[in-house]
Length: 149
Image (cartoon, rainbow, N blue to C red; front, side, top):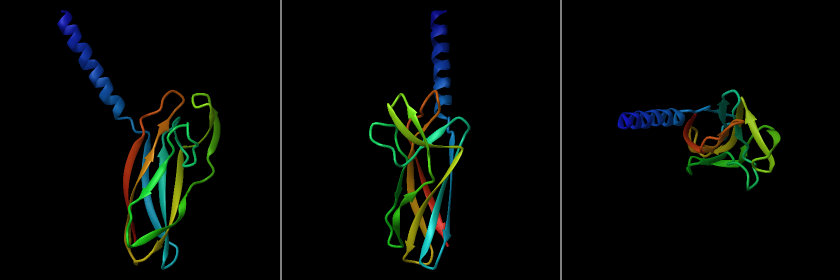
């Protein structure tokens, strides 16, 4: 009887652990728009489920993981400046003992690029951490590929 109880307990914890890892409260969408024959803007949109938030790119050291964009090098384009973001929400978080900057619901980041070729594909990745008032999920990394026509 003890053996059956032990096996059932292990199966239950395995199922709960697998379900917890499937939680993904942020979805990403990407697009690009040419603003001239030699420039374009890449739009990177995060849609965030209710009660969750992701952090700004401008978080100071000692806080949560900030959102980081990395663009794959290419001869077809070059970055103009840094990835921009709208004004984030600022809130003091006791856990980090500091003000943190974050976004709820949705946020659109923008990266201006100089085109060295008429059409190209912008590839890269976004690293981010998502939290709610009860927990933070481990940092995630998502790759993207955005055609510019």
